[in-house]
Structure formats: structure tokens, C-alpha cells
Image 1 (cartoon, rainbow, N blue to C red):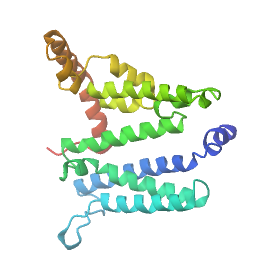
Image 2 (image 1 turned 60 degrees about the horizontal axis):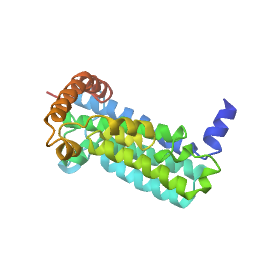
Image 3 (image 1 turned 135 degrees about the horizontal axis):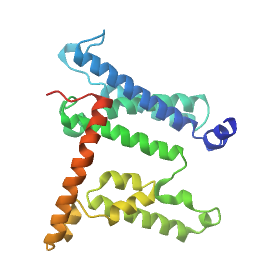
Image 4 (image 1 turned 90 degrees about the vertical axis):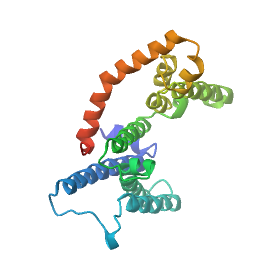
Length: 245
């Protein structure tokens, strides 16, 4: 275990990233627990409303991100300062992304169905950071051998092909697969070759004169959403709390 820790975390200088991820997840979970207690009227916690203004926790989150970011820039990637900066930054990200939906809609949608976007973004962020910790790098560059890294053409070709897969998946309305595919090229390829969603840019451009393709796209999207949307909502509600009626 000690050898694995040194080889995969300490030697590649990923300890600050691990600390940031741990602080991010812990802050998000604690914040959600507190907000759910406030909504239920339990415990000593209350909304912060100085002067009648509701101060959302995205505000201290931004402050922590700024402080942690500047400490990281000033202190380098290693040492005690880097660890402190990583924890502060991770805490700030946890507070900010917990209210991502509020920033997106510029409205207090925290306990609405739109507010579950925050939970979805948090889950996606945790997955991407975990991939980086596991050794994945964007666009599959990590898959190059030591000899190939000196070949610029090989690097450019690898990045370009994987970026193309992710871009096609995105235009087909498969945003989650496109984002994950930046780190895992096979996922982007899967999204790129599948049928586009009916309201995506790809469908509007290429299915306009193909009624059979449009019909198949609608049927497949309906079946997919019926199968997975309910499960996804249940997971999001379990983590972040069910929206208010």
C-alpha cells in the first residue's frame, strides 16, 4: 500500500489534487446535510440573512477559491502551503458547485427540479477528477509511449482525433459522454457513432430530410429517458434532497 501511495500519489505530485477532491466532496456533503436540516426546520442551523439579504454559500465559496488559488500560485505545487491551498480550493469548489444551478439560472432554484443540475455537475466533476487521479489525461495523451511523446505529429494526431470524437458526441446532444470522452476516448467514440438526440444540432442539420432517422431518434431518446432518467433523478434526490413540491 505504501509503495502504491508513493508511486501513484506522492511521486507524480498528486497529493494536492487528492486533498482538493476530498475537501470538495466532504464540503458538498456537509453543506447538503445542513441545507436539508434548515429546510426541515431541525437543528441549530439557519439561513444567513444580514440586513435582510440572504447570503448564499456560493459567496464564501468564491472567497475560498480565490484565496486557495492565489496561495497555490504563490506557494508552488508541493509542501505544506500547497496542501492548504488545495483544501481551501476544494472547499470553495464544493460550496460553489452546490449552487451551480442558481448561478446558471440567476434565480434561487435550489430546491426545485432545475436545482438538481447542481448535484449532476458535482457528480460529473468528482468523476473527472477521479479519472485524473487514476492517471487519465485529456484526449488520451497518457496512452502514448515514451518514444512517441517525442513525436509531435503523433501527439497532435491523437489529440485531434479524440477531440473530434468528443465534438461529434457533443453536437449529437450527448454532453455527458462528450465530457467524459475527453479523458476516456472510447466513451466519446461510443457517443459519436450512436444516433443523435432529436433536438440536437446534428439532428437538425443531418436528419432534416431523413424522416426515418428522425423517428428512430425520437423513439430511442424516449426509451433511453424512460429507462435512465428516473434512476438518475432518484440518485440525485438521494444525494441532494428531493425538490419541493
